[in-house]
Length: 385
Image (cartoon, rainbow, N blue to C red; front, side):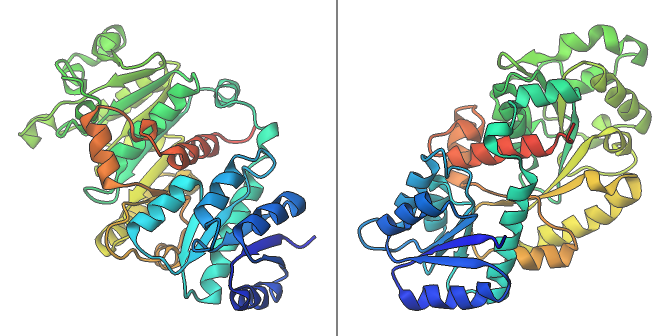
């Protein structure tokens, strides 16, 4: 059966162009010419994907998006906002309303098709929500996971991703240990407002044979199910340089804690952290939609693929702060020759506000879409039973 696309736009010419572009690729396209009509058609037809304009009289695209997300029968339907509005704030409002993707008119038919195919493929990979067991059940049945997070360059969002991923798992009552292995910067403790006294580096300076007995002395309880093994800022990089035997022993010990472990590696690669990467069940590489980060990601991918036997463990996450002109997803994936697992849209002001309050970003008001993305990411990191 052909995938069913609902196009909602108050300009009939636009819907006709969408129909011409998609029907030749086997899609069934239904048109609706206003927000209320689009919502009614969506409830009747249950489309596989919705493509809608933002600027419509009476009920704009964001209002329709919110209404769809509140309808249990439609809540998981992929939504692409297709609009002439291109400001970063416009994108933020749409993602906060629940949109999965955002395309600015005019867009090449090939780009539109690629975005649709990507969202439909992701929907197909995910089981229907009513058949999805809770995260806690999934993680309990599969056992603890060991997840490493890397940034392709400074400011790529690795710490923000690691922190919010760990918080998402903790909210699902999964006992989670967040480990800051950037032993020079200590950003995680700063983000969470913890004054790291004894830290990971102090633990590593103890005789390796005593680590199992003393580990709990260095772990800080942040929430009911969220614990932190912090690092603190140290100015002298030579004093805090990790060594491969230390990293190997540490990774083995952390895997044996019985907790799911999320490791923030910052931008560090090399012999010292190779054992951590090799023992990871998943390695998340964060990049920004700008040239330096994308080139850095390609270099990092080449290195990781030489270190990690199963390259399927390596997943790319693009963190878009909505600042400046972003490079299109298709161009990024073509350059990296690997699909992006997810694009996480974040606002720098929101990040600053939550850091000042020592809270993960997913707890900030208006971050429902981001919280949903992290829950989905958490599910994707667990292999099917």
